[in-house]
Amino acid sequence: MLKTEEWLLIRDLYSQGFSISEISRRTGYARETVRKYLKKKTAPEPQKRPPKPSKLDPFKPYIQEKLKEGPYTAVRLYREIKEMGFDGGKTIVKDFVREVRPKQGVPAVLRYETKPGVQAQVDWAEMEQLRLMER
Image 1 (cartoon, rainbow, N blue to C red):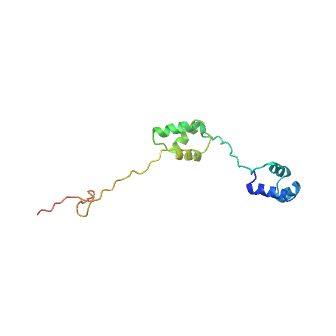
Image 2 (cartoon, one colour):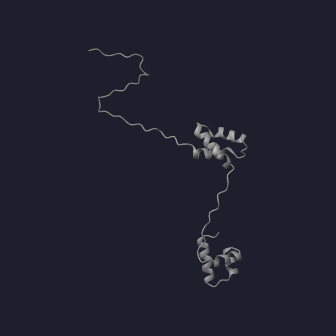
């Protein structure tokens, strides 16, 4: 597939009077390719390819069910589907698990602040004994 600039170059050379053979020599494209793109009235649009089926496709529902049940690692899931007949590699399983695993965020903490001298905090793990001052 030609880029828009290359298509414009072919059309420009043809409008200047160059033959298809000469355009082919200058651009490096075959004469049939030059003819094909000279017939087009609009610039070529890139076309998307249909998605290629993955080796993991038959096992995706199983992996998703297992991830809903509990925290499974990608390596464990890989071993399980390998026993079921999967012939792909670990990386494809790890990438898929990373995509579908529920995201675990850090829980938000509401900060509680007071004015100086109103509240005290103590780390009880460091204290062996509590002594109160008597007045």
